[in-house]
Amino acid sequence: MHFSHVCIESIAYVLPDEVLSSAMIEQRLSQVYERLNLPVGRLELMTGIKERRSWPLKTRPSHGSALAGKAVLEKSKLSKDKVELFIHAAVCRDMLEPATASFAHAEIGLPASAQIFDISNACLGFLNAMTVAASMIESGQITCAMIVSSENGRPLVDHTIKHLCETQLTRNEIKPYFANLTIGCGAVAAILCHDSLVSGKAPRLVGGVAKAATHHSALCQGDSEGSDGLAMQTDSEQLLEAGVTLVTQTWDAFKTTLGWSDTMINRYIGHQVGAVHRRRIFEALGIDLAKDFSTFETLGNMGSASLPVTFAKALEANAINPADRVALFGIGSGLNCMMLGVEW
Image 1 (tube, rainbow, N blue to C red):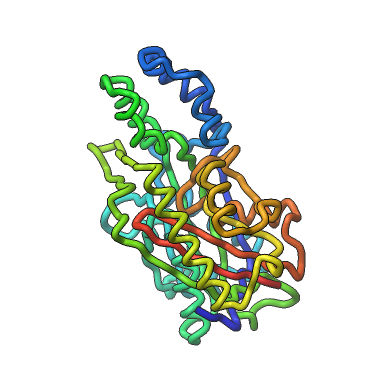
Image 2 (image 1 turned 180 degrees about the vertical axis):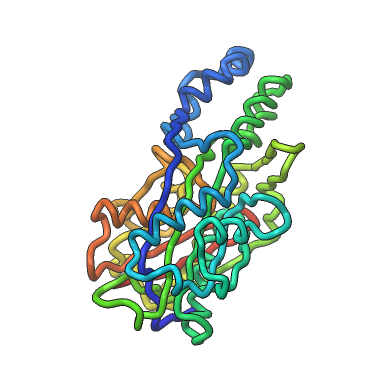
């Protein structure tokens, strides 16, 4: 993929007020820890995640996305009437039908002329939506798009804790549920547009690559369970090994496609899984860990919102400067991987 005229005009995020620490989760699991003789502090020690955020009960994904959409419009120099494409790109959706984008579109008050739909691809959905929007901008079909995502992992965390407390699982049997406890909540929105709509310097999406290894699709699977519950099981060890292999293949293709190398890249923004995942990926790619910017320590894994929120926070913290090259790399269960290049 190559893009010549696509800018990330603005990006904004919204985080819930409620903080859920790893210590608080372990307190709720105290009877499980005692029965299995698990050391307190294990969750933070193994993941590097100290805390994550939680939306209030019954928060709809469309509402979080609408909050983020309104926030990005406040930062944007473009009016909402310019938006010709609106994509909701989260794992979480209000319901199967209609598209969650419908509810968020109405709440934000976007124009009726905007084409709207959902894109869902595990933790990679937001990057997928960026390439769809960029392709439509590059081809001249549209000039401006808004992409939103709001992930609500609270039902998954609550359901997992309840399940672990009510069943007599062994140490090995609880492993597939461990990744669930790293999940956090948050929302993000970005406006992508043709460079003719932007005055001055703005981040440009220059291209990227995507790779799939769908024979690993059974390693992480989630679904609804009952009217208000979510269930997910993950083979974390096998998923990490398969992910490292796939991201290595994607990195090789990315370097060839864009002609970039580690020495040319100023900052890496990756999907936020945890400390072990980050270390293994950077070691496998042979890239400089000092160039990473992470948020998993205080936000956990927010699914498709993790990478764009982290990108927004890096900009906010001045960790990305004008003239920098940034590599965005995401990986989602399926397995799917994408790397995109951004420069000023």
